[in-house]
Image (tube, rainbow, N blue to C red; front, side, top):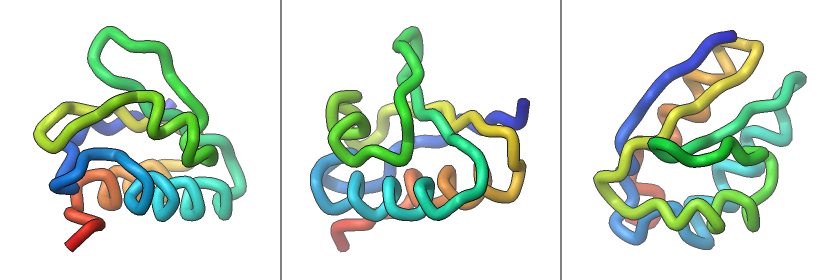
Length: 85
């Protein structure tokens, strides 16, 4: 299963706006994608509420997993951007 670990780039962490944008992109994919913090349980990246429960702050590492490498890369790219800028 493709996986990629990235650093959260949003200045507010994975809160409302960044979580919504990531969830929208993940839900549009053909296969499920999960996000997890180091040592944490994976959550459904297609749910903004679940993303916010990670409590991920700027600089935290997030692992993105899924069956489609292109979708994993796309979601990982969003996680690493400052989506509140």
